[in-house]
Image 1 (cartoon, rainbow, N blue to C red):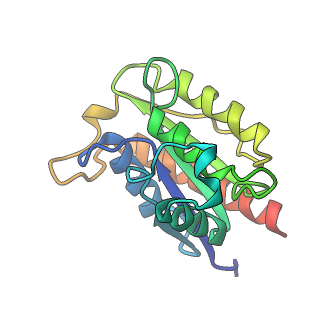
Image 2: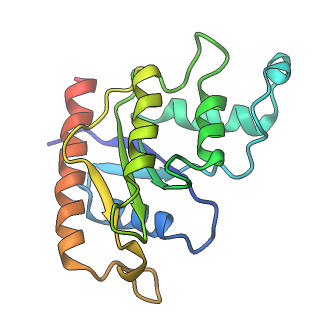
Length: 185
């Protein structure tokens, strides 16, 4: 039997009804039962400014503590201008400081990108992966998880209706769970 694992979920969209948040919830719904998902809000984080490190804002400290307590991290992001949204980049920066005390260091991770368009956030996916390599986060490499056409995949209650996507996300979640165990064992 697999050991219980806590996964911090970082959603790169702030919109209340975002496809990205719906997609993250759909992944949590199909994931193995031993994984619990903690959706860590990033919208309240002040912009990173090294001058604030001597007395960090409480929202930085709270964010860092929640990520630090997690066994792994799932990043789910839309694509803005072929990259990650600024709010997500800010969260990554806040978590990576102070130098030498990054909450990301060594945590298994996975990236899921999405867009209403056909290429599913390909640019954001690779942009984020580049940062995660630097942050020393062992990341699921396959399947590459770009979800295109996301606007047509949910009903009015936010439930995933696309069965092929559900099957794909189930396979992804199993692979992520295996990757977590590989890196934490």
